[in-house]
Length: 199
Image 1: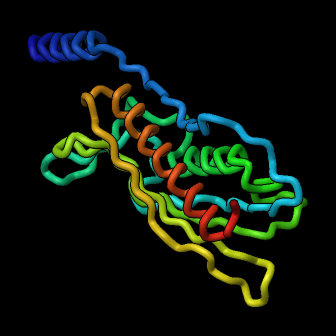
Image 2: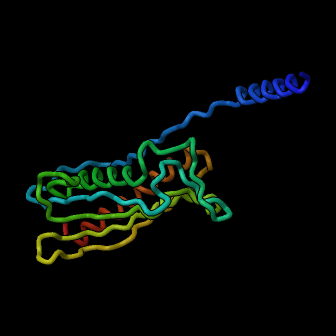
Image 3: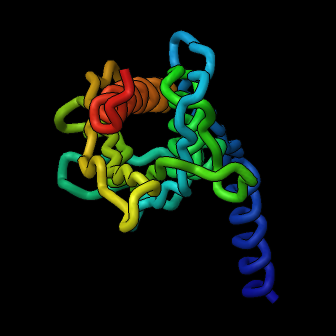
C-alpha cells in the first residue's frame, strides 16, 4: 500500500512539473524583400521566366539557421520563416526583377506567355554565422537565352551577400538575412542587365 502511495505521489509531482513548464509559441518571420523603387515594364522588351528556386540540402527547413562556433548548423524550432527560404527567395527575386524595368514581363512557371529568357537558381546558404557575427546568403543562378537553337547560356554565377549581425536575437537574424538577400538581388539585376545586354 505504501509503495502505491509513493508511486502516486511521484506521478503527481511529475505532472506538476510538466504543467509548470512555460509554453513557447512559434514565431514566424516574413521573407519578403522588395526593390526600393519600381520601374514600369519595358515596352517591346523580353519576357523572363523565373523557374522554381531549389534549396540545397539542409536549407529546406523553415527554422532560422545559425552556424555555431563549433561549426555545426542549428535550426531554430520556435523561430521560423513564414515560408520555406527558397520559396521566399524565389518570390522576392521574381518581384524584384519585375520592378526593375528591364523586361516586358517576368513570369512564373505555368504562365501562358512564351519566354525569351529563363532564370534558374539554387539557394546555397541562408544563415547567421555566430562566430563571424555576419548574416550570409548565397544564390547560384543560370540565365538561358531560349531564342537561338540550341539554347545559349548567358550567365552562370554564384552571388553572395554578407552583412554584419548586430545581435543574436531572432529579430536581428531575420532582418540581417533579408538585408543580405537584398544585396544579392541587386547584384543579380546588374549581372543580368550586362549579360543580356539590356541598357
